[in-house]
Image 1 (tube, rainbow, N blue to C red):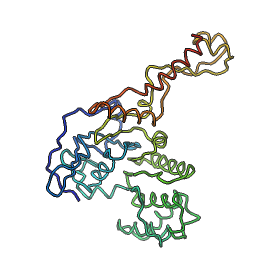
Image 2: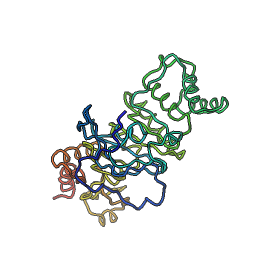
Image 3: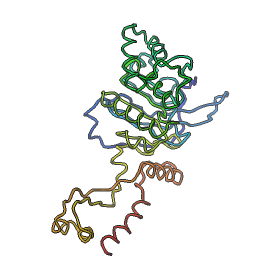
Image 4: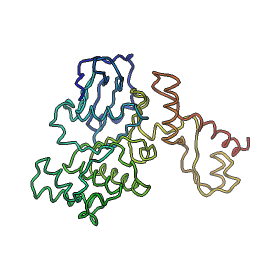
Length: 335
C-alpha cells in the first residue's frame, strides 16, 4: 500500500471543470474530492507515475455518477482513494463527511470490483451468508438479506448451485449481491458489465437503476459508454489523470449549434417547410430542441482534443456530427 501522504503533486494549477450549480442545494454530497492528486513513486522515492492531478468532483446523494476514461486515466486510483486503500499525495477525499482514511465509513459502502474473487465451491446462499458474517449480522438478519438479494438479482432458481457452475453473467450478479449484503448507502461498481452478453448487460443496468429507485448512491466506473449513457445522471471524464469534462449526461450530449424539430402527422411536402407551414398542414409540433450526439462520440472527441491540447478542460461537442447534420438539413429545406 502506498503511504505517500505528504508529497506534493507537481502539476500546474488549473480550475476544475464545474457543472451547473442549480442542483447543488437539492441533495447532499456523499463523495467530495478536493484538489486530489496521487503520485506513484519508485523504491527510491522518485516520481514514477502522476496518476491523478488536482481532481475536484462531487457525487450527490441518490444519483448514479459515471467515472469514465481510457486505461491509465486514473479511474481505479480514484476508487482506491475513495475506499481508503491508497493515501493521496495531496488534496483530500471526503466520504459521508469523513476522511476516506477512516474505516468506519466502510460500513455504509458496497464495492463490486472489476473481477469478483468468490469461492467457487460455495453456493450463492453460502457466499452471501459468508460476507454477511463479516459485517457481524445476526443469523436472522443474514437469512433475510440473503433471500432478498437472491430475489433481487434473479438467482432464485440457482441459489443452491455452486458458483463454479455459474456463467459469467450469473457470477457478476452474485458479486453485485455480495456488494449489497450490508445494505450500503453508497455502491461503487467497477466495470459491472464486463464480459456480459447483451441480455446480461441489460439486466445489470436494470439492477443499477433499481438501486437508484431505492435511494442508493452509485459511482459507476466503466468503459462501456452506451451503458453509462443509459443509466448515469452525471459523468466525469478523465484523461491522463486530469478531469476533462463534468456535467449531466443530457447536457454534455446536446449539440448546441443544431436545432432539431419533431413533428407528427405531416405529409412529405409539409416536412420541408418551417414551423409555421407545419401548423398549416395540420401537423403537431412536438419540440424544437438541440439533438444529442452519443456518449461514444463525446468521449472520443474529448480524448483526441486532450491529446492535441494538453491541459485543456472544456471541448466543443461533436463537431463532426454537426458537420454531417448540416448538409442533411439543407437538403431537407430545399437549399
